[in-house]
Length: 382
Image (cartoon, rainbow, N blue to C red; front, side):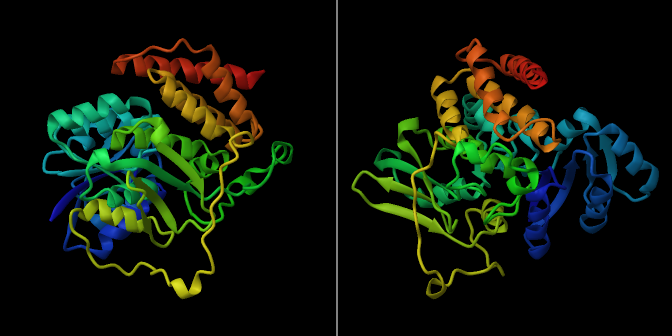
């Protein structure tokens, strides 16, 4: 029986994680649930899974829940509550699916407490990859990727020596605007952007997919997860989204991981590893798949990928700044305060004026994250 803390339980990955848990009650017990502000959904999850503690980062939401809930689960609130959830005694695996930079502190706390990590919060490694991987090594903690692409790479690399890897190949769907040019993206709507062709995800990550920023973040994440150089990471657009990623080895062999477009599959693999367990997930029927196609990404139109490669190659605090600017710009787009192309402008201009610092400490990352958010906000007012 694996005892789980689920950080981000009311989001897309969180709810699908609970679906996996519910389908295999013999394997899992949910000890901790934590969310941002969705008190009504969290209350339903508490009633179904009976965790020992539940947390809402938003203190007003926690107050609402406490006024209604009369059960045995202890209700906590705020940042302190999230950190307590991350280190809760008896938990052996922490699923980190909180959105954005907010996932960094609880992930670090969980690692320091010796918890294994099922990582769905890619920003943790984008912002602080070197620090996180070093701490995990020192604590003997396993970090298992939940993203479908990184779970695919992880599976392809099983039993292989690091020095035999020539290239990691991350596949991308291309998002809802694949094939369009910059002038066609000037007036795209939020609805257009959220109409992803193959995946059902949260709003922020769906926008990141449309800009190819998400794929750029995955490139930086892959650099740290698998200890490779950026010139060993290639992105290939694969519109069918059935090949989730591939590894090319030094002898020319390519290994690929294929599956249906269902996030529950990589979630289950991360939670049950090193075992594989049965599931009711849709199987691929190759008689019904007419073709697999591949394209080179258009990084001149979808500049998010290009900017991420630049930030990752620069290293230091630059990936942190790039991520912060993107989070602010995407929030503005989703709130109708900025156009789609403004996202690229905000990221690029913030990176251009940033004074990059190499080998940053955690305090440096928090400081530069705050600076970048403030600078991005100022750009959005112009």
